[in-house]
Length: 66
Image (cartoon, rainbow, N blue to C red; front, side, top):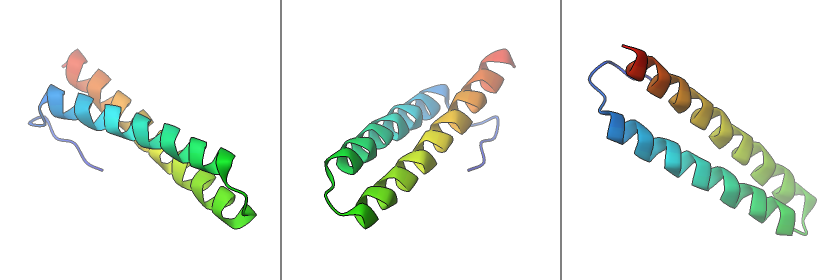
């Protein structure tokens, strides 16, 4: 996901909040899943959302420092 200098800070913060929410939801679904295949799927999906949140945090820090 690319962010340029024109991406508004509020949009970045909204995306961060969304990815953090999705991460938590995936972790909950994985915890409740009785099927190991589904559990692994949601754990991997949650990790992808977690990495997107990390990327957004870095973009916010870069934007704030500029």
